[in-house]
Amino acid sequence: MNLDKTRKYLENKKTDYWDAREETREQTEIKSEKGEIQKIEEKEKRGIGIRTVKDGSIGFSYTEDKDKIKETCEESYKVADSLEDQGVKISNEETHKDKYKIKNRAPRIEELKEIIQRIDQFKNHPEIKHSEVRIRIKDPETKFINSEGSEITQKIPFGSIELKLRGKKNSSESEIRKSRRLMNLKRKNIEEKAEEIKKEGMKELKKLLKAEKIKQGKRKIIIDNQLAGLFAHEAMGHALEADLENSFLADKKEEKIALENFNLVSDPTIEGTGGFYKYDNEGVKGKKTKLVEKGVLKNFMHSRKTAGRHGTESTGNGRAQNYSHPPIVRMNNTIIESGNASKEEMIEEIDKGIYVKGSQGGNVHTTEGEFRFISTIGYRIENGEIRKEKPVKSILLSGKILELLEKIEMIGKDLKINKTGGMCGKGPQFKRVGDGSPHIKLEDFMVS
Image (cartoon, rainbow, N blue to C red; front, side, top):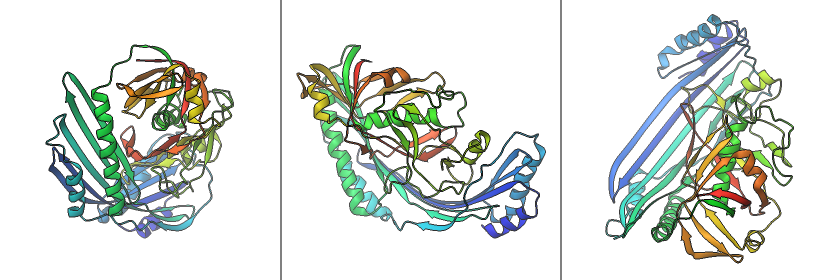
């Protein structure tokens, strides 16, 4: 690939704006089931994506063929030139010339196989009927240029390790999933994370197999950091992406939507987290953005395209899965900031309630403002104490997002950035992200 050829060709076109992203991506994936390696995949992809804006319309094209750069530029230009005015305006932003590379070489395949096989040793365990361990490593290097003079190289390798266990004891069956984001790819760190998820997974699965189901009803509950972080990302974050114009929050800017102790931010600047980057895929420097401040909706997350439409600045949230996709508004680290209560203060005020721990996923309807989340496990709270000997099976939390915000009674001062390793999907694109939160106490919330 050659960005110089791209620049020379596009500079001769009558465009309002153009940019190009060249990316080389090395990917490794290893998977085992029941202690046996089932998949080993290594591949490298290389390509360039070109975006052109002309007379209020935008065109995008990409190629993986280094001999077709000219044709790809032409295709992007023709698309923009052939469309009627769509009202596209790219926001004015500061230009940057920078190279940011993290040296973070992953272990060799044989070493990764050893780590997986050391963890996936459940064949002879009487209660575990199925096990899966997966390691994914991605090493992308992106070079970005645009018509305004930005020239940025960025390389941030990352990965994840995931464990799935399915168990049965007597008539009780349960499944548990554990994962860790790998922003440090040294062998020792991967081994430590692998041991963490094995230990946690085994411990919680054993408790789930003897746990009881709770009856549906309203209860005082405390949500742990992981599940509250999922709420920050899924329920709040997606609704605050500015390209979702039908979001239930779209018309609520400067309105009070939560109590004064509720603060939500977007922040890609925290090194070592899942949503960390120095620049987004539009060449905008990452920065912390206050989304909700003292309960008032202050900002949405913007790309240059949505910022131009709304007459504001990009928040540095223009991100693309890779060179074959145009940037759209995507989250980075979505975080509920610390309050002033301790976990102990929350617990001691509850005579009867539930401590809700971990996350097994969920979904959100951003138009209607409804959510549905499932915890990993729960524990009864009795007389101001978490009863670890009284586990309850995965708990379903569902309802209206704004009603949940109204139910928040206390926010902890124990903010944690979650270590889980999932990817976030939006449309056809997937991107690494992060989230975080303190513990949160809710008053009389429906659980089942």
